[in-house]
View 1 (cartoon, rainbow, N blue to C red):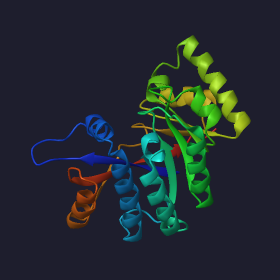
View 2: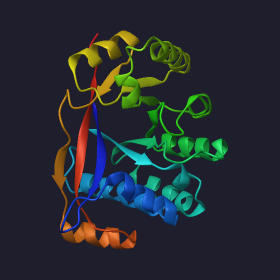
View 3: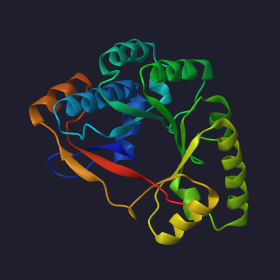
View 4: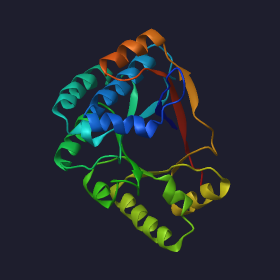
Length: 239
């Protein structure tokens, strides 16, 4: 079991739409700063005891960040600090296209050498497709919730069976996302998914952060101030 760490940014008047929030960073070319903040905050929260020391934590990392030279230099330094300190699963997101798989796999190698694992996030949506599965040296593949909801479709089921076959050949573990009802869990198990994530198992739990610390870190990232981190559990689907 591990936890996925989710960022939520809230201003004084209303919650900010997370998708718009991330897209704004990407459009400005600053998404690597947000990813750096996320990773740094997880390490700091783990060291201070806010996050459970026995658990692993999954966090999104954009392909834009991985291909950014500044982020590459920062990440090498981060690995030196975090290796052996906290278990991380780095989820490569689908919001931006990958233009250089060589750089992506170099990132994967550095991560794995530090004891971290790699996941392909939201497979089946956005840019996350068969090219990702074939070319990225991943440990996990996360099936997008849209595929889980459409599993009963014969065409979707056939596509998923082909994906599962490829994952078995490559030794990639599969996580079914957004499982909300028992029938979806049953279908995911029938498909062969080893893990599941979603409201059926529990909603994300808020972990309050130190306001002063978060503010300072986030000023460094040139963004709005987040006030909380949410963590959603990933569960093993028993056979």
